[in-house]
Image 1 (cartoon, rainbow, N blue to C red):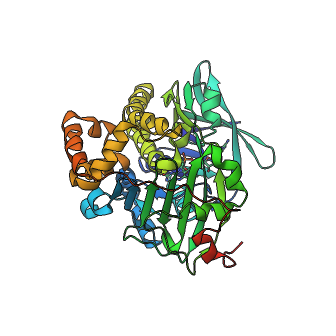
Image 2 (cartoon, rainbow, N blue to C red; image 1 turned 120 degrees about the vertical axis):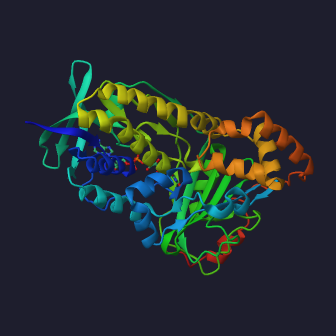
Image 3 (tube, rainbow, N blue to C red; image 1 turned 90 degrees about the horizontal axis):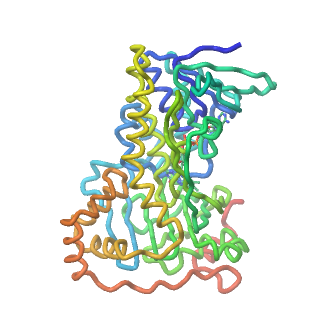
Length: 436
Ligand SMILES: Cc1cc2nc3c(=O)[nH]c(=O)nc-3n(C[C@H](O)[C@H](O)[C@H](O)COP(=O)(O)OP(=O)(O)OC[C@H]3O[C@@H](n4cnc5c(N)ncnc54)[C@H](O)[C@@H]3O)c2cc1C
């Protein structure tokens, strides 16, 4: 038998839980339907850098206090390219606008508990969404199966797909979308005891071919990441940890690993195409990865999951409460996603192809090393606080051209030595100490 709610949400990840909390707090009745049985489940393929753009949503939820109490770090990053360092101080002066580094194993269960404790929210664990319910062309709810094979029909005045990048709701509701290829693969692992060589909680190196990061998280967990062109995959796979560590060789201020231990598997993501969907229409809305997946290289997905959840609630809770036109709210939401995130998605997808830096990136990275205003603009676009248009304005382009004349030439970066040739310095240090 069908059960009626105001809102029916597929997926109790970041987007689904955030939306459920905010709808519930407005007095709406919400079904939050999650395939996993365990409330402590979390997303493993993530490097945990939440962008500053999401800070207002985290504060509205009140989860920022929980993140800090759990040891999450207010994040900032030093950013290196062959043109030099763009420092954390220049990128985010005073750190008024920061995000957080917090492991998903900590964040996801906290958000889920917050949703489960919100009056009006029914968290249905162990319920896998298999289809949407329709009344002619309009989506009116979800069909889920439970762990015993029981079939459940959940009817809602609004249906939300927050079920991640392979969203069943997106697919079954027929909203149009398009994908873009990714020319790089990535591997990462968690370590304790890493000594970072700059003051910021995070370091990012883009050498024009590949990318490395070190992200310090709560409880002395540092994620080391290598993202390389797909042509290098076979060689990289011969020794995953050796290759991961070797990829840091030769980078300036690479982390010191003496005494460090690996405390996770080495995770890999081989193929990660971008995807953008029409975010709403005909009774259904998509939030988080279900709506938009951009290359993880830029760490935007968690922030966008939180922000799209908030925009959706703000666009539709009023009509849901007053019996107004929800469809108009969905149009507002869809436009907001497209206008706010579309330009970032285009920029990110273009670089995800695996191409080298283009002329604008060379200009931006060189200028930001010597001009704090350019560095701050770079930080606002990278933190997804401003549109990419900020660095394309005539005034900013003129400034960058002038600054570029003061910048030094780029240094040449040697390709990382893959395992099987000489041992990497970092690997030699760690040898025999890493936990399995
Ligand atoms: C290697 C890698 C590194 C990344 N690093 C970062 C980073 O540093 N910073 C960042 O911001 N982003 C990062 N991301 C992206 C980020 O992980 C995602 O954007 C984010 O998890 C999206 O949140 P979500 O709630 O939309 O989806 P998810 O976190 O995927 O949650 C979806 C939920 O829906 C549930 N679900 C799925 N299907 C069904 C179904 N049929 N029925 C019921 N429930 C279902 C799932 O079990 C899950 O609980 C990274 C991604 C990758 C791959």
